[in-house]
Amino acid sequence: MTAQGATPGGRASASALLPGVALTAALAFAAWLLHQLAAPRGLSGLILALGLGTALRNTARLPALCRAGVAFSLRRVLRLAVVLLGLTVRPS
Image 1 (cartoon, rainbow, N blue to C red):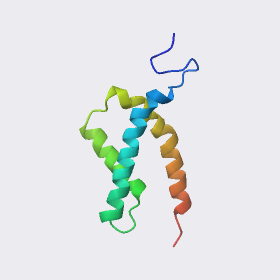
Image 2: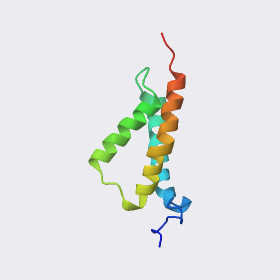
Image 3: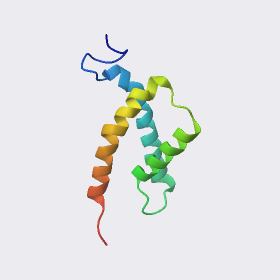
Image 4: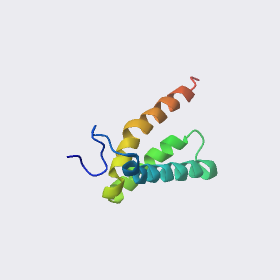
Protein backbone atom coordinates (compact mmCIF):
# COMPACT_ATOMS: atom_id res chain seq x y z
CA MET A 1 0.00 0.00 0.00
CA THR A 2 1.38 3.43 -0.95
CA ALA A 3 0.87 6.79 0.68
CA GLN A 4 -1.54 9.19 -0.95
CA GLY A 5 0.19 10.94 -3.84
CA ALA A 6 3.15 8.54 -3.86
CA THR A 7 4.09 6.14 -6.62
CA PRO A 8 4.93 2.50 -5.85
CA GLY A 9 8.65 3.42 -5.89
CA GLY A 10 8.09 5.80 -2.97
CA ARG A 11 8.35 9.00 -4.96
CA ALA A 12 5.64 11.64 -4.87
CA SER A 13 3.57 12.05 -8.01
CA ALA A 14 3.72 15.26 -10.01
CA SER A 15 0.23 16.23 -8.87
CA ALA A 16 1.29 15.86 -5.23
CA LEU A 17 4.34 18.08 -5.82
CA LEU A 18 2.54 20.81 -7.74
CA PRO A 19 1.14 22.91 -4.83
CA GLY A 20 4.47 23.11 -3.01
CA VAL A 21 6.47 23.76 -6.17
CA ALA A 22 3.97 26.48 -7.09
CA LEU A 23 4.40 28.03 -3.65
CA THR A 24 8.19 28.05 -3.96
CA ALA A 25 7.92 29.44 -7.52
CA ALA A 26 5.71 32.26 -6.25
CA LEU A 27 8.23 33.00 -3.51
CA ALA A 28 11.06 32.97 -6.06
CA PHE A 29 9.09 35.36 -8.29
CA ALA A 30 8.50 37.70 -5.35
CA ALA A 31 12.23 37.65 -4.57
CA TRP A 32 13.08 38.33 -8.22
CA LEU A 33 10.62 41.21 -8.34
CA LEU A 34 12.03 42.66 -5.12
CA HIS A 35 15.52 42.30 -6.55
CA GLN A 36 14.50 44.17 -9.71
CA LEU A 37 12.77 46.98 -7.83
CA ALA A 38 14.65 47.66 -4.63
CA ALA A 39 17.50 45.25 -3.89
CA PRO A 40 20.71 46.60 -2.43
CA ARG A 41 23.63 46.31 -4.83
CA GLY A 42 25.30 42.92 -4.74
CA LEU A 43 22.34 41.11 -3.15
CA SER A 44 21.20 38.36 -5.49
CA GLY A 45 17.65 37.18 -6.04
CA LEU A 46 18.61 33.79 -4.60
CA ILE A 47 19.73 35.36 -1.34
CA LEU A 48 16.48 37.35 -1.20
CA ALA A 49 14.47 34.16 -1.86
CA LEU A 50 16.30 32.36 0.94
CA GLY A 51 15.60 35.23 3.31
CA LEU A 52 11.93 35.45 2.32
CA GLY A 53 11.51 31.69 2.61
CA THR A 54 13.14 31.62 6.02
CA ALA A 55 10.98 34.49 7.26
CA LEU A 56 7.82 32.90 5.88
CA ARG A 57 8.62 29.49 7.35
CA ASN A 58 9.31 30.96 10.79
CA THR A 59 6.14 33.04 10.88
CA ALA A 60 3.55 30.90 9.07
CA ARG A 61 2.71 27.23 9.16
CA LEU A 62 3.28 25.27 5.96
CA PRO A 63 0.05 23.68 4.71
CA ALA A 64 0.18 19.87 4.56
CA LEU A 65 -0.78 20.02 0.88
CA CYS A 66 2.46 21.89 0.07
CA ARG A 67 4.94 19.82 2.10
CA ALA A 68 5.95 17.32 -0.61
CA GLY A 69 6.56 20.02 -3.22
CA VAL A 70 8.48 22.25 -0.83
CA ALA A 71 10.64 19.28 0.21
CA PHE A 72 11.29 18.51 -3.47
CA SER A 73 12.24 22.15 -4.08
CA LEU A 74 14.60 22.10 -1.10
CA ARG A 75 16.32 18.93 -2.24
CA ARG A 76 16.53 19.43 -5.99
CA VAL A 77 15.85 23.00 -7.04
CA LEU A 78 17.73 24.75 -4.21
CA ARG A 79 20.85 22.66 -4.83
CA LEU A 80 20.78 23.57 -8.50
CA ALA A 81 20.26 27.26 -7.66
CA VAL A 82 23.22 27.28 -5.27
CA VAL A 83 25.44 25.64 -7.89
CA LEU A 84 24.36 28.21 -10.48
CA LEU A 85 24.96 31.02 -7.99
CA GLY A 86 28.44 29.66 -7.39
CA LEU A 87 29.13 29.72 -11.11
CA THR A 88 28.25 33.41 -11.27
CA VAL A 89 30.60 34.47 -8.45
CA ARG A 90 33.58 36.36 -9.83
CA PRO A 91 36.72 36.80 -7.74
CA SER A 92 37.72 40.45 -7.30
